[in-house]
Image (cartoon, rainbow, N blue to C red; front, side, top):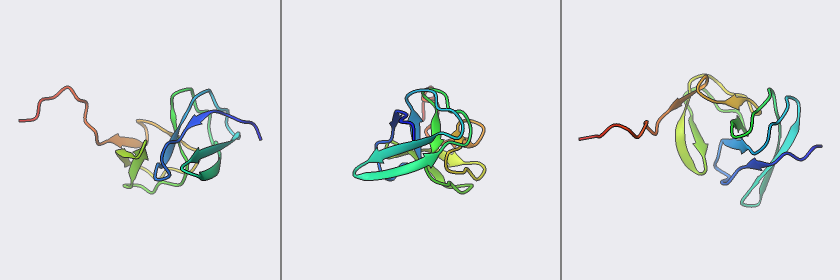
Length: 99
Protein backbone atom coordinates (compact mmCIF):
# COMPACT_ATOMS: atom_id res chain seq x y z
CA UNK A 1 0.00 0.00 0.00
CA UNK A 2 1.39 3.38 -0.97
CA UNK A 3 1.71 6.11 1.61
CA UNK A 4 -0.02 9.34 0.61
CA UNK A 5 0.01 12.29 2.97
CA UNK A 6 -3.39 13.49 4.14
CA UNK A 7 -4.79 15.84 6.74
CA UNK A 8 -7.41 14.25 9.00
CA UNK A 9 -7.59 15.99 12.37
CA UNK A 10 -10.68 14.74 14.16
CA UNK A 11 -12.23 11.29 14.40
CA UNK A 12 -15.64 12.93 13.78
CA UNK A 13 -14.47 14.27 10.41
CA UNK A 14 -16.23 12.85 7.37
CA UNK A 15 -13.54 14.15 5.00
CA UNK A 16 -9.78 14.36 4.84
CA UNK A 17 -7.59 16.63 2.71
CA UNK A 18 -5.04 15.36 0.21
CA UNK A 19 -1.57 16.84 0.78
CA UNK A 20 -0.41 15.53 -2.59
CA UNK A 21 -2.18 14.33 -5.72
CA UNK A 22 -3.72 10.89 -5.10
CA UNK A 23 -4.59 8.65 -8.06
CA UNK A 24 -7.81 6.67 -8.36
CA UNK A 25 -7.69 3.18 -6.81
CA UNK A 26 -4.95 4.17 -4.34
CA UNK A 27 -5.39 3.09 -0.76
CA UNK A 28 -4.65 5.76 1.82
CA UNK A 29 -4.48 5.59 5.58
CA UNK A 30 -5.96 8.46 7.56
CA UNK A 31 -5.19 8.80 11.27
CA UNK A 32 -6.63 11.01 14.02
CA UNK A 33 -6.88 10.70 17.79
CA UNK A 34 -5.71 7.08 17.77
CA UNK A 35 -8.19 6.14 15.04
CA UNK A 36 -6.82 4.74 11.79
CA UNK A 37 -8.88 4.14 8.65
CA UNK A 38 -7.96 2.79 5.24
CA UNK A 39 -9.79 4.46 2.37
CA UNK A 40 -9.75 3.33 -1.28
CA UNK A 41 -9.78 6.45 -3.45
CA UNK A 42 -12.45 6.21 -6.16
CA UNK A 43 -11.32 9.05 -8.43
CA UNK A 44 -8.21 11.21 -8.68
CA UNK A 45 -7.92 13.69 -5.80
CA UNK A 46 -5.79 16.78 -6.38
CA UNK A 47 -3.56 18.39 -3.78
CA UNK A 48 -5.65 20.43 -1.33
CA UNK A 49 -8.93 18.76 -2.22
CA UNK A 50 -11.19 16.79 0.10
CA UNK A 51 -12.25 13.16 -0.08
CA UNK A 52 -14.80 11.27 1.98
CA UNK A 53 -13.36 8.95 4.62
CA UNK A 54 -16.75 7.26 5.10
CA UNK A 55 -20.04 7.14 3.24
CA UNK A 56 -22.03 10.37 3.69
CA UNK A 57 -25.78 10.11 3.07
CA UNK A 58 -27.57 12.87 1.17
CA UNK A 59 -28.46 15.70 3.56
CA UNK A 60 -25.89 14.75 6.21
CA UNK A 61 -23.44 17.30 7.51
CA UNK A 62 -19.93 17.22 6.08
CA UNK A 63 -17.37 17.67 8.85
CA UNK A 64 -13.80 18.91 8.35
CA UNK A 65 -11.38 19.71 11.20
CA UNK A 66 -14.18 18.91 13.67
CA UNK A 67 -16.51 21.59 12.23
CA UNK A 68 -19.52 21.39 9.93
CA UNK A 69 -18.60 22.92 6.56
CA UNK A 70 -21.65 21.92 4.56
CA UNK A 71 -24.16 19.24 3.69
CA UNK A 72 -24.10 16.47 1.11
CA UNK A 73 -26.45 17.27 -1.79
CA UNK A 74 -26.18 13.68 -3.05
CA UNK A 75 -24.99 10.47 -1.39
CA UNK A 76 -21.17 10.44 -1.26
CA UNK A 77 -19.20 7.20 -1.13
CA UNK A 78 -16.04 6.72 0.92
CA UNK A 79 -13.09 7.65 -1.28
CA UNK A 80 -15.09 10.04 -3.45
CA UNK A 81 -13.98 13.60 -4.18
CA UNK A 82 -15.93 16.12 -2.05
CA UNK A 83 -16.31 19.54 -3.65
CA UNK A 84 -18.94 21.96 -4.98
CA UNK A 85 -20.56 19.26 -7.15
CA UNK A 86 -21.73 17.28 -4.10
CA UNK A 87 -21.43 19.71 -1.16
CA UNK A 88 -23.57 22.70 -0.27
CA UNK A 89 -21.71 25.10 2.00
CA UNK A 90 -23.14 26.12 5.37
CA UNK A 91 -20.42 28.51 6.52
CA UNK A 92 -21.33 31.42 4.27
CA UNK A 93 -19.05 33.42 2.05
CA UNK A 94 -17.86 35.81 4.73
CA UNK A 95 -18.39 38.93 2.64
CA UNK A 96 -21.93 39.78 3.74
CA UNK A 97 -22.77 41.76 6.84
CA UNK A 98 -25.60 40.25 8.88
CA UNK A 99 -27.71 42.82 10.71
